[in-house]
Image 1 (cartoon, rainbow, N blue to C red):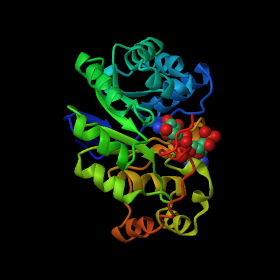
Image 2: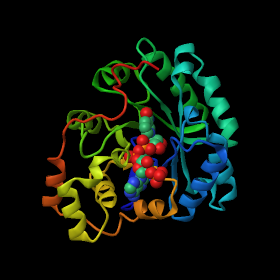
Image 3: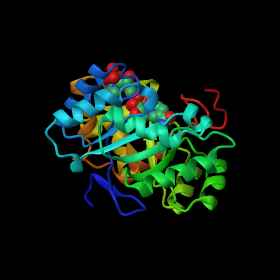
Image 4: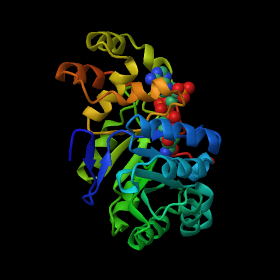
Length: 274
Ligand code: NDP
């Protein structure tokens, strides 16, 4: 393990930084941005069936020249398939669109009431088939995990949740750490909204001659949280990856820890209406 990687609870490595591709709205655009990111040094890509761009991601993976075993590819099963009980079929279709033999991580996109344990059984079967190296969840809060984990034979490797300095979910993060479930931050830049003009973050960024986005992403990886910022712009893709050559002081980490406002910008995982 090096400074850019964490080890999951099954012993497999996962890059601390990846590229998110939600709202990269065509396969051609996804192919372009994933190629740019891999050229910039990214080795992890986060897609999902619902993003509608798995084909483009797969095209970039095949064209990029980096061996498959040096890349970490995540996709997710969507809620309709969870409700229908067609997790296995959805997985096979995702692999087909990606044109890959396996993914590194397959995630349950949202916790659907009444389906949590049956979905996890199907996920466990997929991991045992070897077609996904690891399985995990997304948007699972404490009540969801309290239902899933006692019934699980394989503890989720990852829980991907909305997380940024204004939504730190400390109790959930601590609980996942106790369970050896790796936290992965979605919307890690809070979608580029007011977080990026926060006066304290601006001041810390100036002190390091960095951008606020870099400080936020650095705070995440320095907290051992996997982060997957999305950008379609080459300069920002490069900027967001330049976070492993500086260190926030303990005092700066504590100051950012104190910014939590419990401000959620995405959907509340306890009320999934889609
Ligand atoms: P992010 O917090 O990554 O923010 C992305 C936005 O910030 C884009 O508008 C981007 O603009 C802008 N941006 C990126 N870098 C910079 C920068 N350096 N300076 C200023 N602005 C910047 O939000 P996302 O919601 O996209 O989250 C990231 C990923 O997380 C998603 O792509 C997806 O993979 C995953 N996700 C998962 C969810 C889940 O339910 N599991 C839900 C939501 C996201 P531009 O592209 O124009 O550069």
